[in-house]
Image (cartoon, rainbow, N blue to C red; front, side, top):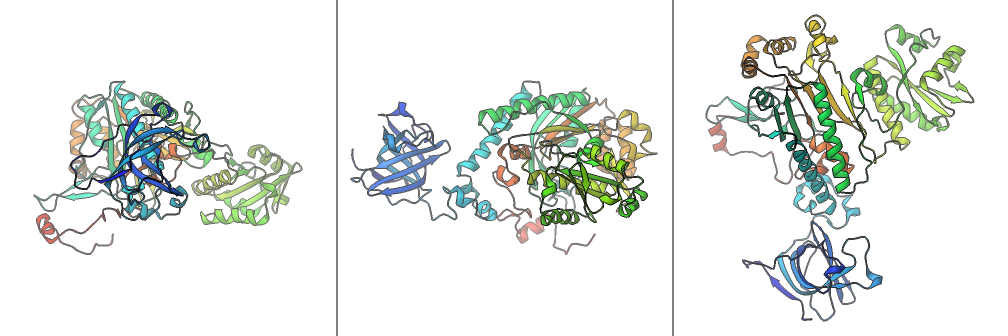
Amino acid sequence: MRQAEKVSSSFLMSFSQRTHSCGELRISHVGHQVTLNGWVNRIRDLGGVVFIHLRDRTGISQLVLDPSQSLPDLRTETCLAVTGVVVERDATTKNPKISTGDVEVKVAAIEVLGESRPLPFPISDEETMATVGEELRVKYRYLDIRRPSMYRNLAIRAALTSKMRRFLDARGFLEIETPIITKSTPEGARDYLVPYRLEPGKFYALPQSPQQYKQLLMVAGCERYYQIAKCFRDESQRADRQPEFTQLDLEMSFIVQEDILSLCEELVLDVINGVVSEFELAKDPVEPLPRLTYDESMRRYGNDKPDLRFGLELFDVSEALKSTGFGVFKGVLDGGGTIRGVRYPRGAKLPRAEMDALEEFCKGLGAKGMARLNFEGGELKGNWAKYLTAAETADIVKVSGAEEGDLLCFIAGGFAASNMVLSRLRLEIGDRLGLRDKRKMAFCWIVDFPLVEWDEDSKSWSPSHHPFTMPKHEDLAFLETDPGRVRADCYDLVCNGMEMASGSIRIHRADIQSRIFSLLGITPEVQRERFGHILDAFSYGAPPHGGIAPGIDRLVMQLVDTENIREVMAFPKMGNGYDPMMDAPSTIDELQWRELGLQMRPPKKL
């Protein structure tokens, strides 16, 4: 075999294009001459015999150069075209960990397609990459994505959206794009605003969702619409939130809530299980989705995003302790509060320091303290057990479901405040006991949300979801007299304690929509200014309609077992909305300021 030739392709108009992918080679290719294109993943020099692992998006092939061959001066991540003959590896050198591990390529020629500078981080070393700062990874995202684990996340995301499209196309949905620059009609978060150059003082807004457009498409008679939609919200960042995100947006006409739930459940089972199977993910198949009302979820789990991978439901002993002699609890109950708790299986033997740490955890969430009892030897034991009567003890054991060796943790206070503490405490216990199994994707529906919530700061009602949600027909009579009693025809899809989708039956009558706006403190004049287009549309024979919008990013997060949304996006922003790769947001030059009719002023405090 002739010496490997190094050919620089820096100034060539052509190069040796691949005949095979790096992850494709098998025993059946032995004896074939092949050309591979890819990046140098690793170089090993074993006493003159040099091995190169060449990587492309499909996998890795091992290249071998014998001692008589000269090796070009290569760094890892240099881009190559390599030609050679496929040979079988010796039995002792076969690598069962990679799909091409039975063969290697004896190199005849190497073309350098793109030389690499020294790397900012070791792409081929996943263990070391786990210690690399996230901002550095995002700054060099085009390198970070070369890692097979990151590429796999993007491939899973692509498969998810592809299967969604096929599912909906087969059911008569029409994919329609809606505008990205539109009118500012705030939906809860701040809008991203775009100055209108031709008329200074006017602005477009980037859509927080395609909500109004998809409703107008239903008025237009499209009946079944969807799109993979980009949405923008100028709000505080969290691990599961980005300033721009992607959702599957869909809407249907002439339907009721059950039609949406049934269709979306079928989509989840078909698409999620299909991706799990295609990529052989370590996930159990998703099963039919249970349904919980909002009130039921709050009572049993303390929030409207329950993690159903484990039990440990909250219990309420307020009734059992209504005549308690324990002063702290008596004061809470007399003030209209509740005494509720959660069970810590086999927690009675926890060291005192760990029990104290649990109490500090609760205090950090706003609780004044955490009362506790151990259930041992068929009795409740603890510093306030002496206040319990035999009947109260029996009731607490029954209501809590206490078993021998359990620790019972109690939080006293208002229902809402207690829920915030108890829901987090339940998850903390679940984590400590390893009950939040990553193999499970426990989807469920939450239905019958309240239509509006009272905002104590502004002394006004705000929508639980958005102002276009239809109240339940039987509750419409209470809209003006008792708004807090009105339930909404809306529903959330939840998985493992995270909201995956939100939807509702929409208002399609101008008179009802106007009543909702008035309830939210929007005057008739402002209604016409901000929402006149949709109120007018509803006067032209609008059909009953509804929809839902599953979050693509969050669904992929569940599939790949990450709590960080940036791990499933190609080019994410950092926590403050900053993009270190593009150095955005950035300043603009003086000419742009003048063209837009803008000048810099210190922002006024609201």
